[in-house]
Length: 108
Image (cartoon, rainbow, N blue to C red; front, side, top):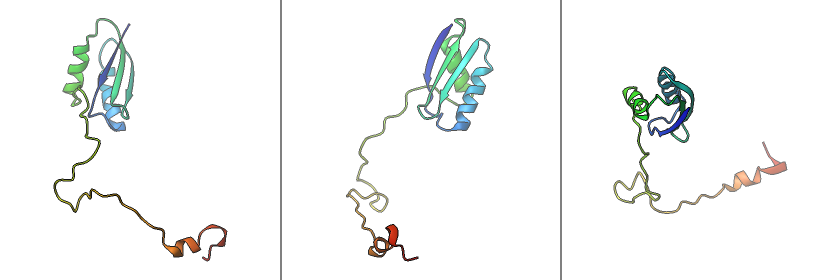
């Protein structure tokens, strides 16, 4: 038995996991499938006659291409429309009326 792990970037929700599992389980020689939408990975235990290319082709045909997940910059850019993103720390204060009504002395 062999094990193949594939990164599937477009598998991010439960219905994607279900579709990927259905696609791979229909293949002859596939024994076990572990799929994670959170990690966007699928690990397939299969017989040695099942090739990685066959798994990749089946997923691509089903609309789930295999590849590396795109890396996102850690810090967002401040360019563009400033109304959508503000490059400054935000601070909020609690309304004093809320503080007066909190704890064991609620007035409502």
